[in-house]
Structures are given as structure tokens and as C-alpha cells.
Length: 197
Image 1 (cartoon, rainbow, N blue to C red):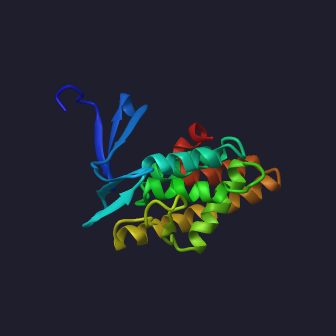
Image 2 (spheres, one colour; image 1 turned 135 degrees about the vertical axis):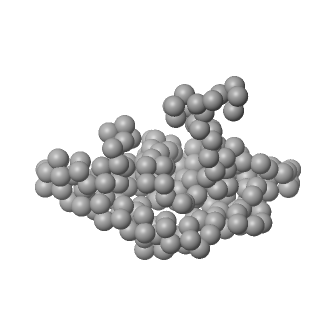
């Protein structure tokens, strides 16, 4: 802290988030212990409120990268939108969960439309009630959305609000009511919306 007095440090389970340069450079750091070194390295990382979960970062990155190829850029762009919503509204949901949910949603999609896919995935998250995801790589167990019951209820409430606003923005755009659509998107992303588009 002495070297970087303006650097913001906060927890975002299971990571510690370090924001340099007023938030322009953001790093997520998670302590981990090697659990296996077979074909894919796996690690134990904290899973609050108590306990550990296994993760395979290289396998998960490869999965997202592969899905991101078709439609080109869709999985990562949708992940950025979900993470922007999470940050803007301080939603207590795992960034890793959002990344895996976005990749799962984009698998097999013929093209990426930011608003259409955002409202579709929010609908899916709501309908599934943030159910745990089965690791698509088969390397680890379930991927949980939140780390506590309180976090779950907070995240579900945020999902319901965002789902409603995304749907209204989608309908407004279909009726060529761009300013109305923009207003609903600001309700999702707060004042930071244009920067995330």
C-alpha cells in the first residue's frame, strides 16, 4: 500500500481484486495449491465461507477460447458484459461462474448480438435460479454461482432486475426506440453503460 497508495484492493470471492491506474488495470489474484499434474494441472482455491474448490485454469481458458472462435468473439464479449453488470451493481456472483455461463450460452449460437444475447443469458440465469454448472471440461466438479446463502439471494434479486431491464431494452430496440432502450441499459450498467457497449 505504501508504494501504490491510490490502488484499490477488495475481495471478490474467491479472489482478491487489485485495481491500478484508477481501475484501468485490474487483476484478480487467488491463492492456490497444486492438486494434480496429469494431462491438465488442477489447483485447490478457496471457496468461502469455508472450504476449497478445485479448478483447472488452463483447461477452462482453452474451453472459452474455443467457444469464442464461433461466433467470433461472442463468448468473451458476453462475459465482459456480464462482468460489467456485476461490477456496476456489485452483484455477489462469481466472475468464473459468469464466464462459464456465457461460454455455455454461446456454444452453437450462429452469431453474437450483444443485447439479444445479454437478455437471453439473463433469462437463463433467472430460470435456472443460478443453478450450479457442470464443468464443461470435465476436469472439476460443480461451478457455483455464489459462496453464501445471503450472496445467493442478493445475486438472484440482481438477476431479476437485470433480466427485466434487458428485456425492456430489447423490446424498445425492436420498436426503434433507441433512447428508451438506452435508458433501460443504463439501469443495468449504471452510468458506465456506454463504456461497456
